[in-house]
Amino acid sequence: MHLVSTGVILKNITNTTPIILKSYNPTNPNSDIDTYQSCTIIAVGLPCFRIFAHQNNRLIFLENCNPMPEFVHLHNHTHYSLLDAACTPDQLIQAAKEDGQKAIALTDHGVMFGCFEFYKKAKNAGIKPILGCEVYIANGSRFDKGAGKAATKKRNYFHLVLLAKNDIGYKNLMKLTTLGHTEGFYYRPRIDTDLLEQYHEGLIALSACLAGVINAPLLAGDYETARKNAIWYKNLFGDDFYIELQNHGLEGDEIVMTQAPRLAEELDIKLIVSNDCHYIKKNMPSRIMCSSISRTQD
View 1 (tube, helix red, strand yellow):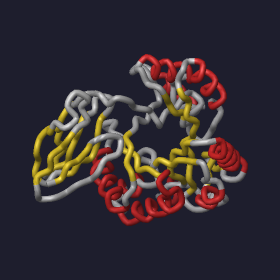
View 2 (cartoon, one colour):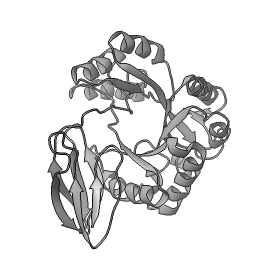
View 3 (cartoon, helix red, strand yellow):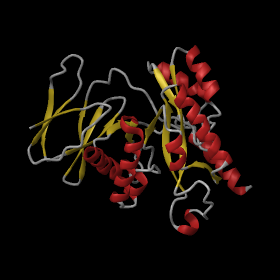
C-alpha cells in the first residue's frame, strides 16, 4: 500500500499493489480520494489541483480537489521575449494580483531586459518578484557556430529556466546572459555547460519546456541521454534542480508527463508543475503571429 501526497512535488509510483491517492484538503487533510491498481501519477493541473494518472496506456482524470493554498507561477514571458510573448510586466503582475498570488517569476527568453521594470512594479503592487531567465544552452560549446538543426538534423540549443534565489544568483544570471550575447550568440544568445559550472551559485534550475534539456531527449526517444543530462544538472545544482512538468495540450506533453516523473523518481529529483505563460488573454496570440509573419516576409 502506498500513500501518495500530491502537491507541487510529486512522486512517480508504479506497483501492482493498490495506490491510495491523498489530496491536501484544508477541511479534511486525511481524506482518501480513491484506489487504483498499478497506476502512475504523472501530473497535477493547477490552479484547481487536478490529479492525473497513467494506467493501461491511457490518461485518467482522478480528482478535482480543493485549490492549493498557494501557488507561484515560475515560468513566465513578457514582450521582452521578442516576437514570442505578448503580455507586459504590468499585465503579468496584475493577473497575479487578481488571482491572489503573493509572488511571481519573470523568465524571458535569453534576456533580462524586463527585470528592472518588473521588479519595481511588482514590489509596488505588493507581489514578491522572482527574477529569472529561460536561457539557451548550446548543444556543445557556445563557441561552436554550427549550421543548426536544419542542416545537422539536431538542435543547436536547448532551454533551461534559471531563477535567482539571492544577490549572488542575480549577479551570476546577469553574467550568463551577457556572455550568451557576447560569446555564444548564434541565432540565439547561447550559454553552455562550462559557463554554468562557473556561474551557477545562487541559482535554481528548472528543466523547462518541451525544448528543455531533459524533455527534448525524451521526445526523441532517447531516455538515456535525458537521464545523463538530469544527472549532470543534479550534480551541479543539487537540491536546486527541479524537473518541470507542463500540460498545454501539445503534441509530446503526454510523453513527458509519463517519462519525466519516472526519471525524477529514479534519480531522486524533485518535480514542479508550471505553465509556460506567454500571454494573459486568449486573443493575445494573434498579435504574436502577425509580428512573426511580418518578420518572415521582410
